Length: 228
Ligand code: DX5
Ligand code: ZN
Image (cartoon, rainbow, N blue to C red):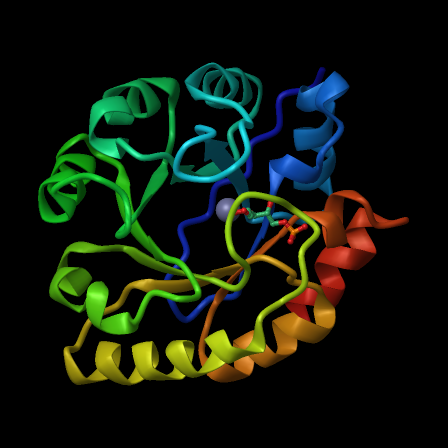
């Protein structure tokens, strides 16, 4: 396998396309990651599920480490686990660049975010569609990314929930009022059509699983989302 380097720092004003590894062919993960990079992916989104916080089990730190060792793409690790504080050091050691934890999980959110940054990673905070923006407001000055879930997390291939768009526009307003610079990411049911609506609302990071890895042409799919 050829090692590919592709890490360009991004700001909240950049469009970032992050294919989700959950939709890749697990029988050849390294090649799938290379395929995503060659298709123009900016980041690789990695969905960690513990079978407790969500009703599915995906992969853990060993997978993050394998991908980290095989390629240099920026690793956007989304922890859908009940105790992110407990497992945090393992994901840091595995080579995660961004570590996103859920506000609904069982931990001291401020302390976990502080530890993520202290470890040299970027810190993301996620909220489920049913969770109001007020739940993350106390932490906005501690994060590099706000992940507004656009499906109930757990499975790829679900339909986009357009009611989340209002949360995105509200988050943009609060970010401006507080002079902050965190990315706004959306995850779930993103394709070129729903991405257009999310970009318009003010999100800049598009996580896309099925619509990229399972597209007839991944490069065309990434371009279509970027230009949505
Ligand atoms: C959902 C995951 C997503 C998922 C998105 O629980 O967090 O990242 O992989 O998959 P698609 O793009 O297929 O909806
Ligand atoms: Zn995700």
